[in-house]
Length: 495
Image (spheres, rainbow, N blue to C red):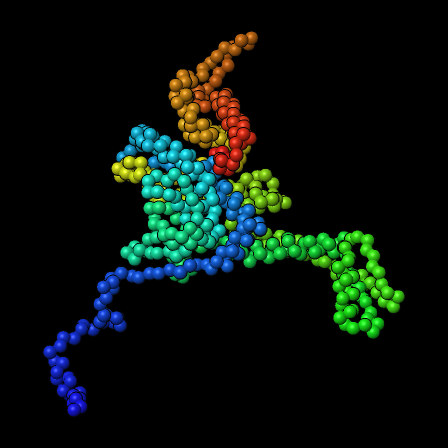
């Protein structure tokens, strides 16, 4: 028997005992899910393997790779090492902070020694280079304790990223070669722009090659294909053979033409045999290759690539019109701009993932409540020592009573502060009788008892510093001549 269907009035009467949900402007307010209080997020790879192959090819065969290498080289400088900063340094002057940090020199030296043991600087430079080229890179190791052998997994062999929904942090990463899943405690994950402007690519990173890969590929075509063709045309010329068929079939005529072309060598003497009835005519073709325009086009692409990284063109062999002063200024801007940004990115990456982890594994976990460990990069000198001295002497002339400590800091001679403090004070000069003359010569009290630095003191310090620098340079030359590429490329200190 069919069931009787209730009328609308009967249904409304039966729903009087039910409690309605409160009104809301949100369409999903009537549905309560278990994870409704968590913003779900997922991400997808930023690039396909074909695109990553383009980046790899552009780096290996164009000036774009040279620009990235130079950027990382200057960012690494003379190397990287850990340094400690006090977390709570309130009501402490500079000297008190220094003395407090000296208590932890043993722990700091242990970290520095361990970096040298595992060849950290070399691995860091390679991993950072890959992360700038492909957007990310995994530096991992074997075992759960202190790393013994560092291994870099190529970005093209790095797979899916898993995100922790609580904080959208990195949960783990899949790798395809070797096949494995790696957790944050087992790696240092380098990623260029983890929160990339590209939609839903969180933790996949952004490649610095993307903006110039088109220009790099065009530049490569000009250099590898167009230029050789033009060179051949300029010394060998272009021409056309006209072979008359004389009643032969089309296939026979094409065979004769191919045989003729295959027997010719550009720019050399050539000879062919013909039948009595064959007729071959040669016409020279002047295609007028636009050499100047093509060179300008290649230069245009180069400037696009170089400008993307902010590297001074002189560092890449393109210094046509800049003088030395202009070049030093551009390198200084380069150091304070792109290089500084790369160093901050590298420091933010390795300080928590490498140094803090190693401190915990070494039993220094409690120390992290007192100090903050950060990566410090050795600077680079871009101006000569005598240029610096000249500038400091000009400052001294403007401010004759500048304290000694400040002058030493300007000259990068801080190590002489202690010797200066132990030196006897220079008393104010008075009327002095000069030998061989009558009377006295009056000197005003231009030098106070606070031991102002005179030119003789500066000259002595400069000679000592110059000898020290030359000895270091000779030592480095001897080491580089006797050892392999074990040491990271770098320079000396920036002023």
